[in-house]
Image 1 (cartoon, rainbow, N blue to C red):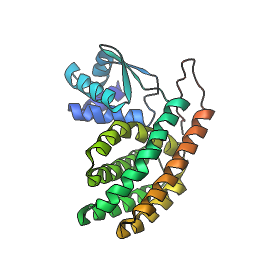
Image 2: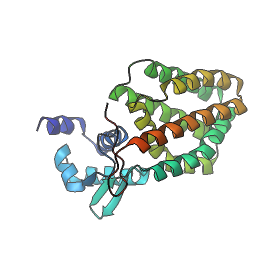
Image 3: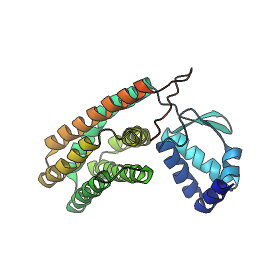
Image 4: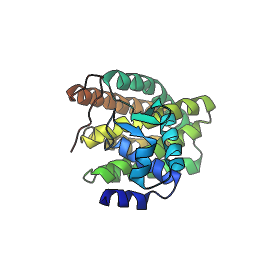
Amino acid sequence: MADRRVLATEAQSPEDVYRMLRTRIMTGELVPGQPLTERASAVRFGLGLPPVRDALTRLVGDGLIQAVSPHAYRITPLTLKSVNDLLAVWELLGPEMAALGTSRADPEQAAQLRQLMVDGNAVLASPLDRDGVVRFIDITEQTFDLVANASRNDRIIEVYRSLSCEMWRVLALILISADCVDTFMAAGVAWRSVIDRRDALGVTRLTRHATAATRASAVRLLTDRTKSGDGVVLPLRR
């Protein structure tokens, strides 16, 4: 009952419900493969069906949940294949998008990127609890949203948006496991200098290295997870 009262207080709008559910999916509090229904979620959050339905519909669009019937859903499973497929595409998109966006960024966007690198490293330098992971994911999302928009390429932006939420969920899994923190911190430091120089090749190398480390870590973590019969991977708990 206490949990429900807290959630009802926090969730006052469809956007609040969407953000709350998204965060709980990202951090593994809502487990991959876990079922959700509109009515049960509305009861839990102490809200009417319309804002819950709106939030769940948005999460389907993000790729974070899957519709299994008109009013029932499940958290999108994480499997070795799904993560490998995702990262195979990201390895093609991420470095080139980052390079294009960095080279085309105007002075204001470049300053924002530099500050985001500083903010991200400050989070990583502290013990990573749930709130820290959520904060770093938010900073990473802001960073790639910015370089995507700075690229001024509508096709790149469209593909990026179709992948980003799933990518951040994988990144959260890695950070919850306290993996790759040093790699991400080093990338943040190096990014600041290549942004100043508008060094597209340097950004490409940095993003490829971080993506390769992310993929290796995700594969290692998922290989070690206990899997159910349908391939659902259970998240790590710290």
